[in-house]
Length: 124
Image (cartoon, rainbow, N blue to C red; front, side):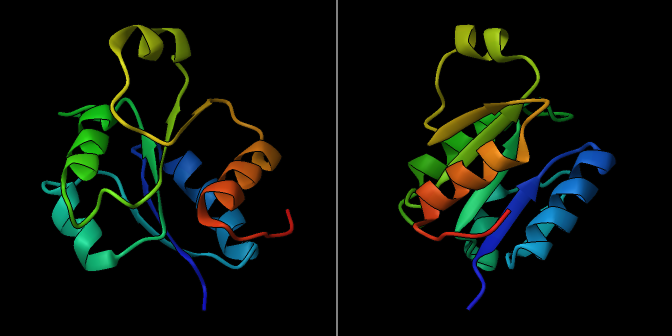
């Protein structure tokens, strides 16, 4: 059974690269650019892992992460935060994510972190 990864990213190019790459290494990928209720979406989709962009329109990905981690039905889902602004993010505090990867990211590093957090090994 394929593991599901939910991607919340508002940059279409990054979303396309991630979707193509993750699909090629046997993940099922669900994407969205914005969402009103991240907890509801996660409960419906039931992902094995969430990739969140930090800078999103209207709300930051950190807030979405905090919502997931505070909800009993979704707190177990590993969250990887992605951002090009690592120093800014570090100064704002930690929202409960399981890993942070700076953009531009290395696909091998991302694959390693996904494998570590899901317990699955995939060829990159």
